[in-house]
Image (cartoon, rainbow, N blue to C red; front, top):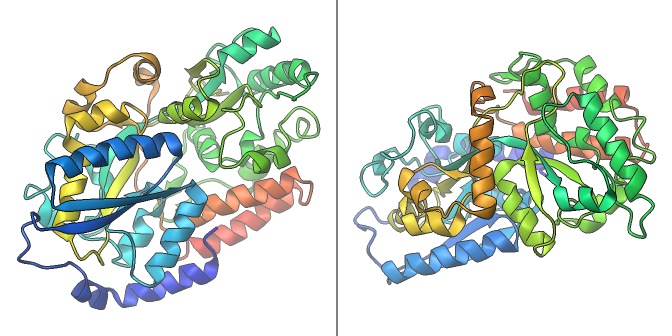
Length: 426
């Protein structure tokens, strides 16, 4: 978890931005063809690591003077590592970026401003102009989106069949979804290795934000929250009756990390971005039949939107910026990379990569899901406020305390709002 001390330190680094810019940026005379060893970091699991290995091997074959060393970690560990590196201006040359953290790293000029490279080493003409600005922060472009995704309710059809519970169908209300959870848990908890309908989904910030969007409100205006403490308390209270026996115990979630309980057939449903189904399949060892539905809603509005799934950035401290930009360009535009990853990092932003996808199995399901919800997808989420990563992590941490019975939903909401006011303060 990124703590407040690290945030303060990063804020102090912002004042040193000119100095960082002066010492970063590498050799201005380098045309990007010279020899270089790049460090590339990403979050994910073994499945993503294997796909990146294939893509990087291909890049190195075509750029024999450039060597790429990769490293990856689970989401929370990944951002802890980046925070530590940022404090000493030693980020990896190329790094996966997320909308939740872009403002934080761009403001402190830890990321290379890419505008001068657009059209000169970095081709972005194939990217939808509604998606490309996702990598912008204030005065420039600091990241390039690689794909888009949409939120979904995943369910394991094989597990439903084993338990003798009918498969869910959309649309559902939130009450109907909770009944589904109870029906699965009633059958599943009688098994030697207990199976539940779901974990406590109210602990996932993005689900709550979709719930807010379903009421017709944008969750944020700049750094201002457009929902109330009462909204959050109601949300966290909504699963109170299910927590004792119907929802997967929090300790099981902790024991299985970084693997999802859903991938290990400990839950029959789980919310996620649609591209994450590839990770479920990889972590499950090929067991299960994973399908996708739109979100439950009480308003008839899905709350769905297209999100820049992942972005790629170059570190300001990179000694080889042009070679780093070349790697980013390759990962975004090369058709073979699209074939390797399919939809596992989201639906590719470039048509050449989309065309290269062999639309069978998981990829076909993701593409079909996005087509099925196309008419109900609303206005895309704009730039996330600086501090989003902190309030998202705090949301999960506090919700875990609710699960362990350490705090009531009302007190938890009060505490989260107090912390959020601090984290979002400019």
